[in-house]
Image (tube, rainbow, N blue to C red; front, side, top):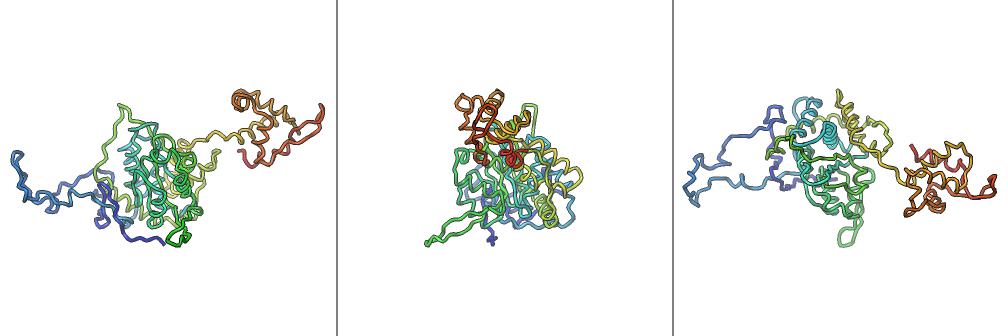
Length: 428
């Protein structure tokens, strides 16, 4: 059981749970409103001192609470929204909010909105994707987009560095949404323990690690199951990217403009968080029992990653299923196959073209290397693929060359039927 005792983590512009917004923007959480009220807590004197006068040291013109760093309480003790939530309208406003402050496409904004809503429902899914915000260089708005997303997320903790131990210990205590900014500074060079721990949080059933604790080194299991977003200059380790919905950011053009994030965005977005908490709580049981499968596009991991978003979009209804599928196709890439898979694909093509029941290793290599667009003619440090190297690549599929009789005599080669099982299992 997680320990839900309140803890305050310092963040600029934060909000403690004791100060709940009663929708200060009249059910318009996207409005950028600023309070102009003056209270004795904020200012002890209404009269301002002339610029050329010195305020006596005994005077206290500004309350200490105004200048102090604000705190965010975890877990945030949100009150569910008291009236029915129009989730379609709320999701539309969330997309508009993201585009107000960030240079993103419609598809990227929609994916971010669906990821945010899904993160409230994470315990209803077996697999939950990371959200990776990637830019080619600095000043492309990664941190800005992350700040906007975190302001609408459930218990979003924004940090610019992290250790493996801190992740699994805080996850054991609180169900946070973790936002890792500057991830390239501590992940790209490959901290194997940290990368493995982040990867482990992708699947609920395997999101556990073992550590020895206490003076007697008692083995203990820690949970790593959490929603997580990462921002990086350049790509993150491939295993993290493979478990992510990726938004590739671009630097703003001179002809583009966005609004500056207000100082109290977190407080302004509290009505959004309350409405999401209310709607997701009401929909949790249905969503958990009715997953929506994404279309298959040759990338099974991407389909796993997008299942929570398709499920949420289906429950929102109206245009959101279409918007989700549009974002899915726009943001998902079908990666180049690994060499063993590429070899299987090319062998299938060769066998299909010639209608063979068997083929010599020599002839198969010749056919493979004839296509200069494929890697086989320069596979071995600029030299062609050899029969031994080909056998090594095929061995994991339990495909091995053997001596057979051909019209030209006895030679080593392969029967077509040896490939049937691997073709069916590993090729689209």
